[in-house]
Length: 485
Image 1 (tube, one colour):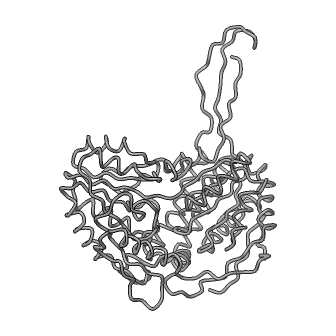
Image 2: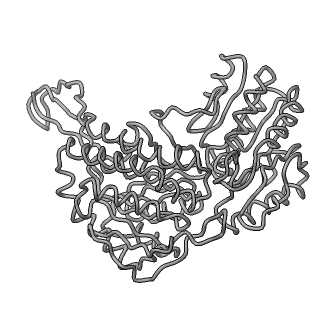
Image 3: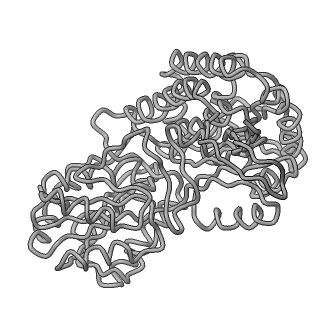
């Protein structure tokens, strides 16, 4: 593909002021396509178009919004294969991941929030009896809590999933009556323009959805700073999230932040070790380790520590690294050469810090592509940088502990708190420990997800919750209406 993609602003496809830049396939290093470089003025124009469209869109009936989201889901589903091929070329995902977890989940999220648009937004509150006083006569006061759309939402999306992540922002925001400005990750923005095309074909009015991309920081900055924007929904690094939060704080803008993670997986001595290893191994290698929910910090109780290390090393050896289009590939490339170098630098840092490289640690022998071998670092301590900083690659560290209290303390001794995991044959202990962990989510004997459960982090892992109906709440303000009975 060498087509020059245009921006989508106010219902029109617009030539970018800044020209185009190349989107590179992480597996082949070939050019996937040419992405538009928006100017600051074009980003502000997109926000202004969203502001203009907000009034009429917020007054549309829930059934009308639901119908548009449902039609968009149908269009995405019909184009699953070509959309997945594009997503794979942009992100380096394996074929199964691109079809199922990227485009497939994207379509499912539009379908979920088509139903979400029809969920009640009013909640009747218990009447209150007020005695006569300075504010009037005695009365029984009725009240409603009503969820209203926030306004214009800037959605800044992550590179690890160019379908599910944007869909998880755009669909609930639109379902609640908001309008959006989408700033996709610079590494794989082309898929998001296909999503915009689907929404346009589904009947989304001009200005309701706007997409502006760019490789320069000024594009994202303008999308955050615009006076027409009421809320920022961001998925990405904690460092960038902190800078966005500073701007939001100055203008009192609403925030939904899904940031970094350094998930702890506590494996107790009564755990099913094989099950724990399967869960940890599958998750830390998923998206080539570029996933914030991965249990990249394994805390193994001393009695099973050696078994956990040995079995994880064996599991890592079965994870086939290579061409994501080839059958049987489990681990494809990371997103860029720079990111590959960053991940490799952490492995070398782990060696210098005293970690033992049990598996991986060497660059796979491919002439092209940004590949990193799944790497296991054992004999780590919780004060090592490889145990404290998010690497965002297929690297996991293993730390021993003795007693339950020590394991919980080690898990909580982190700047992050997105998702932790507990493996134990004692269900009472597993749930007791889960309640003690300072994390937004805890998996008990599983790495599976319930897609109606709230998702978000404690500490530097984020602000707010989304997924399921919680996303509808995240993209709404609560208004109280009170009257005398």
